Length: 167
Image (cartoon, rainbow, N blue to C red; front, side, top):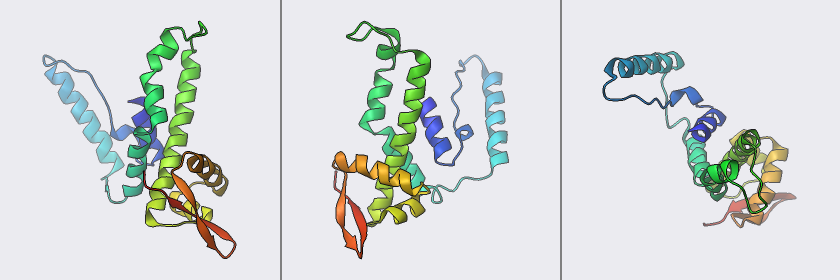
């Protein structure tokens, strides 16, 4: 839930639009209070048009499906509660920082891949459509290219164009 919450915040949707509350069937009034609270919060934020966030929602989904995040989430307890092969545990705070950094990077990579669905793009075009900084796009494209997900398509004048490869 923390990762989904962070991704919704990165996408500009807002982490408050999703909440998880544990309520038993015997706590009807508590459930009703939570529903009222969430309805009020959503009302203050205004309506949500999924078409407006289509690119960003696709990037959120792509990040959630990334092998890196899936592995990190699956190894949470193994890394923080049990010893690794070197008889060490990863500090909870360090793990959370690593997970947050990885979540942001995977979201940005996924956003780039979504922009490239429209065909060959330059680094500048990707940056404009994704809202990412040019330098960040350049660095992330290098990582995505190493993973075999994008490739240099050619040049428009002296400007390199990149294309998404079929996965």
